Amino acid sequence: MDRGKYGALIDAETWAFIERTDSWYPPETATFPVKKQRQIYDDMCREFFAGYPAGVTAEDGTIAGTGGEIRVRRYRFTKARPAAQIAYLHGGGFVVGGLDSHDDVCAELCQRTGFPVTSVDYRLSPEHVHPAAFDDAMAGFRSAAEASDLPVVLVGDSAGGNLCAAVCHATRGAEKVPIGQVAIYPGYGGNISKGSYVEHAHAPMLTLADIEFYAGIRTGGNKITGDATLAPLQATDFSGLPPTAVFSAQCDPLCDDGRDYCDAIVAASGKAKWFRETGLVHGYLRARHTVKRAHDSFTRIVDAVTALGEDRWPY
Image (cartoon, rainbow, N blue to C red):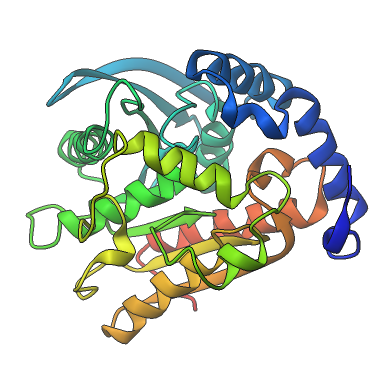
């Protein structure tokens, strides 16, 4: 691998993670047929599966959605006395991923926060183009909110972070709204001609070409503008959103989206905190047990979810 400008910025532990990932999920995977992409992604996620912490159990079920039944996985921790619950929306470019790809992440969030977690298996593109994933994310939030008196914290990584924001925008003024949202290296539909999109266009793990490829699949090749349920940064009103924490990887074309989204919320008199995680790359959640920087970031993520679930704003 030609490490180029990232040779010093990314530490040895993270390079080892990148190389291990590439051995299962090569950088050119985005050019493969979707069925093949999903097989490769699922194999890679199994390679990184860390198991469940003691005391965590999970049960699969279904909820009703506008496009039919939606699969969900519900996690519980035996020793918990929760203040809130989590609705989790997984990453994968709206094309890959599901209940299994982020299974251990959800189990660890459940154990470390003490909050029950519902992971939502939203529909994927190209079989189901926008707004299918958003509709399922909304159904997942509403089902969790209606099934329990516990308030809901939305948590998601990458594509899932985008969906968390879309749900927060769409539920303003509703009877039940998220108490907070935590996003990990999300993409919000920012300006791809400047900032991190240019500086990190060829970053390890995710490139600008990958982002454009997946964006096109999500919309079926159609150009859609002004739709906050697709690209939250295209919203014209950022008021009334719940307290928000966004964790961006420094070496990621999507990095500035997190900053810009948080800045927009703060400018609208809301509460938002952006974390730029130094030297980390897209997908670093899978490195939380092998890379100290990723481990420390995951601890900050857990702390943010816990604080928002307890209706605290520590920032």
